[in-house]
Length: 341
Image (cartoon, rainbow, N blue to C red; front, top):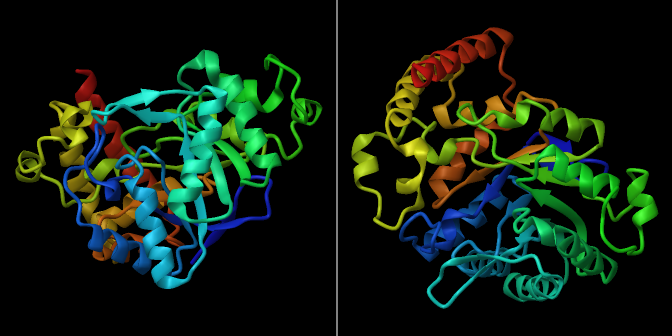
């Protein structure tokens, strides 16, 4: 499989990585019921296919996703690169709580190590910069985890350029923790190595300035939702939407409401000949489209069963031709025009 270097590290990630959000099962932002045996089988199959990294988070199924990864790794004996996150807790009812207090992040790290059953987390990421006033102390906690050898690298998710600049350049960080001078010069092991933003044909906000900033500062970019939570796979339709579990978070998403839902499905059908012309699937096309950008290190591809990752892994190494990119761009513009009328 094709690999790309993660930021300024020496780590080579396969351009397709396994995402385990849906595998965690029900929670406030879950995807409905999930079969644990199928989830474990999907993780095992992804590693067999050559994928060398897995993305997860404590919030995914309220810790369950991390536990499933541990089960799968025990079964295979493999040790892929593992990325997890901090900053989202939950109450007794399973409702999301955003928390970036230093002590909370330190405890989260230990909890993730225990659930994953690993000695070190390869990439520890701040899940969201929320609440904003606590970002600095969360980053200090992450650096402490790094210095203690509990994590190998630290990164951020869902940050905009202003928020990344604050961390990367350390111009207004509270306190004077060790390594600040290195941060101020844009180097040193205490700087983030990566950003994890959403990116797909439907949501291209990172193209405005984020990708350029990451390239200029040697930050890896690991994108999530390249298939827009199933909308760009060609397998989604109104019947499937009606059949989603009542607690599936997608039912609350604007992308799954009109007029966006119909406009996207119409675009997908017109994308189908482009994928078929290269002997590929629409899911592979959606992922390869994000990978066309040189700033993008890799794409997180979610799967709930082995067959899904067996299909989408084929996006790795597929380079879209210029005329294919142009045709896709035209279809994206037509979709967007329908939403601005």
